[in-house]
Length: 354
Image (cartoon, rainbow, N blue to C red; front, top):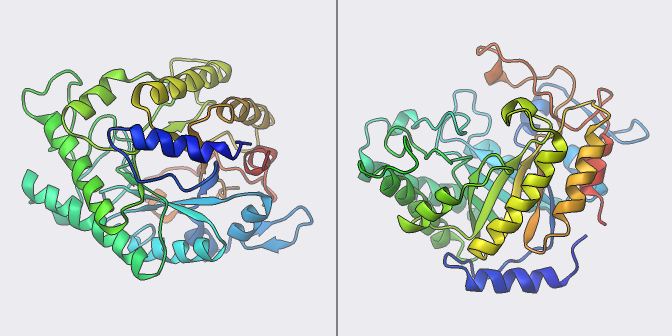
C-alpha cells in the first residue's frame, strides 16, 4: 500500500502540472465501477459474503477495503439506467458508505469508447459552438445535481476512452497527425469546456482525460491535446491484460510490464498522476488472481499512480443489462464475483489494504 507521503507528493506534482487541480485529496484508490448495480438489484441479483450471507454489494466491498466508487452517466439512454437519476441514486448510497466518488461523463446516450462516440439524440442538430455549450451545461448539470445532494466527487472524467476524439463526427480524430480540418482544435475544445465547467461547480475536483490500452504509448496524443488547448489534472487508463486478442497477441505478463512502463513515462512526461480507471480479468479464470497480484505489485510501487478501479466487478453468472438484449450481446465475462455470488480472489487482492 502507498505510504502516507504520496499525498504530499501528488499535491506537489499537481501544483507543478500545466493543468492542475488545487490539491489531491485522497490516498491510493481501491475502487470499483458499479454502474450496473441498481439494474442488477432490480433484476433480483444477490451478493454474498464468505458465509453465504446476502449483503449489500457496496457494503460488502467496503468491508473488503474498497474506498472509491466510479459511476458513469449517459445523457438520455432509453432504458433509464445510467442516466442522471440512476447515477444520483447510486452516488447517494456510495456516499453514505464513506466512498470517494468518480463520475464518468460519457457525453452520449450509450457507451462511449474508442469505436463509438455518438452525439446524444437531443444534441444532433448542434454545430460545434452548440456542442461546446451542451458539454458545458451538461457537465455543470451533472455535477450540480451532486452538489445539491451534498456530495462532492473527487474525480470527474471528461469523456470515456477518447483517444479517437468524442462527439463524432464533429470532434472525431480521423488522422492523429492531421489537424487540417480543425479536428484536434474541436476535440481539445470539448475537453477544455468540460474541464472549465467541472471547476465552476467543484474547484478542487480532479479532471481526468481517459484513454484505453494502458500498455500503449501515445506520446502523440498527449502532446497534441496539450498543443491544442486540452486540459486535464490526471490521466486515466483502461487495462484489460488478459485480452490478448485486443493487443496483437501479447501475453498478460507483457501487458502488465508495458502498462507499468507507460504509467511511469506518462507521470515523468506530464508531471501529473495517472489513474487506472478500468481494469478487468476473466471471471472464473483461476489465473485472474495471479494477473491481478502481478499488476498490483507493479502499480503500487509507482508513487503517482493514484489507484485502480475494477470495471463492473459485481457481474456474475449469465446476467446481462437490458440494453444488451436487443443488440444480441452476451453477458459480461470479466466481472469479479464467482458463480455462487461471492467475491473472487482477484477482487479481494485489489481491495486489500497492503
